Amino acid sequence: MGTLITNGKVVTARETFIADVLVEGRAIAEVRAGIDPAGHTIVDAAGMLVLPGGIDVHTHLDMPFGGTTSADDYEWGTRAAAIGGTTTVIDFALQTIGKRMQEAYATWRKKAEGKACIDYALHMAVTDLGKDGAWIDDVDAMVREGITSFKIFMAYPGVLMVDDATIFELMQRTAQLGALVCVHAENGTVIDAIVHQALAAGKTGPLHHALTRPTVAEAEAVHRVVALSELAGAKVYIVHVSSEDAMREVEAARKRGLPVMGETCTQYLVLSIEDDMGKPGFEDAKYVFTPPLRERKNHAPLWEALRQDVLQVVSTDHCPFRFADQKTLGLGNFTKIPNGGPGVENRMQLIYHHGVNEGRMTLERFVEVTAEAPAKIFGMYPRKGVIAAGSDADLLIWDPQAEYTIEAVTQSMHTDYSIFEGFKVKGNVRQVFSRAELVVENGRFLGKVGRGEYLKRELGASV
Ligand code: URP
Ligand code: ZN
Ligand code: ZN
Image (cartoon, rainbow, N blue to C red; front, side):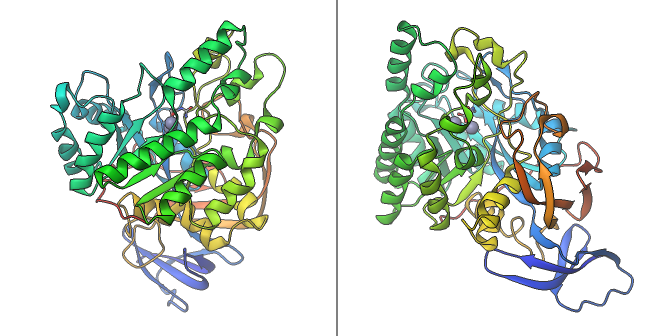
């Protein structure tokens, strides 16, 4: 016999309706009003929303970066994700320059083994295609392992950045295979020049991280990579679009009918230079991530881009570093501050509150940008991202009236601060089911550490 979620309002990307949800084994068996409750364990969801579990397609768990390693390993990061209502993450396996993609894949599977608390998949962050592209067939090998998206960096010269020829060659192969290229779009070499000028002028504090990475450098890279994708006939997904300037390039490409998609992240929708930076001392280092926070005037166009499907996804770019012993590596030189911030726990509640409650998106669009579109774009649909018979029973019982204040002292992420400290939200997750198992109730993780499974993804869709 199964679990029957009764009396709740079921939400999909298309509609909201009162129905019962019957869960049997790992999956959803039936969704309709009036399912006979006899013999089932009942979960009364009266007054609640029943949502598909969130999917965060942009996390960096246990990742060596900036002279240290991101503070959440797979246990900490995926437990915090679950507590916040995310039941699937796609993390980045990072290829070491000079080593094959297979090695990065094996390394990241090992990092997750025995630790992942929810299901996870991997993108491959490509840094090296070998001499004269000799390792290009690694792309095919990764697709066979269920890695159907490949990330490249146009930023971080000398560390992760690849040149345009490498991007183009990768795109030619992904185009043949039907795989996706994900892009960190910023003009890395021009930004480096601006950074050197700032340091030479004695501008060494954390605010200068933001001031040396102009929005036009983001927009230029989006424009260029769209052109490369058009040349190669490839589909492309722009990660962490942070500014109106960059978003307009995605919009222009989509208007031309190109298979260009994009995400923004929670922080670019609710934080800004004016509201959150310019703090005394070294405090601004908490907000050093890349792209940086932008001026507040970018918020409205980014929300509108989500509403109008110019951008399809909200992710977090969760890449946490502790303030006390990691961010401080950059005291006296902002270029040494590890880039990244914590957020995987707060995406669902912040987008619900500032999006749905404040009238910037419908409830259905909230489900679409946090679950359904990520599942479709990244080849997990309809197994994930939707409440329908046959789909994995990744479900949230969401209390639209619950009030919650975000605070570092109560969070589950492994950082000593929150970039959303003091934010008050209305609407929060009450129970989380991952493949039918109740893994979170009222903010407490009840599942077994290591229960999360690796998801071999199919090729995704262009949406
Ligand atoms: O600051 C960030 N975003 N760190 C993680 C790496 C990246 O650029 O996504
Ligand atoms: Zn990035
Ligand atoms: Zn990232």
